[in-house]
Length: 122
Image 1 (cartoon, rainbow, N blue to C red):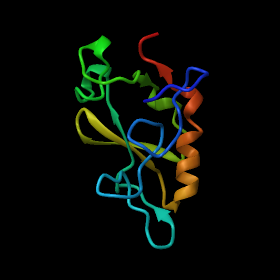
Image 2: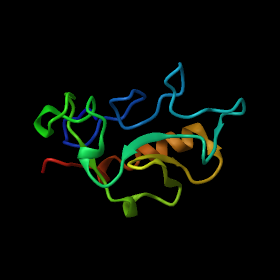
Image 3: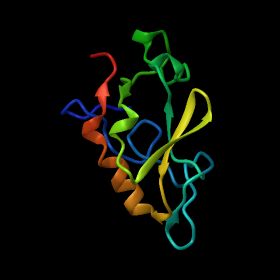
């Protein structure tokens, strides 16, 4: 993810920020007509266990990949109860809403984890 000036991930709605895309063919989660998102429908992609489990285009050159952004890590125990990690195809997983909620709440919950992420190179 892109790094903000304070060393934590930059929040946003792109594949290179802490957040999710909700528009276009590469959306990360479906927002229902009533503005809600649900568990089990996707979310922010993460790699489990180790940075080396990231796709090569996300892994920085310093770790043998092709990416240009730093890698951040966060223990799953640091997630608030409003979010959950669901394994899709190991080592890929999603950080999803734990319950049906408004997209804005989900987004704010994701962004609220910002200071819990640390640079995996440190």
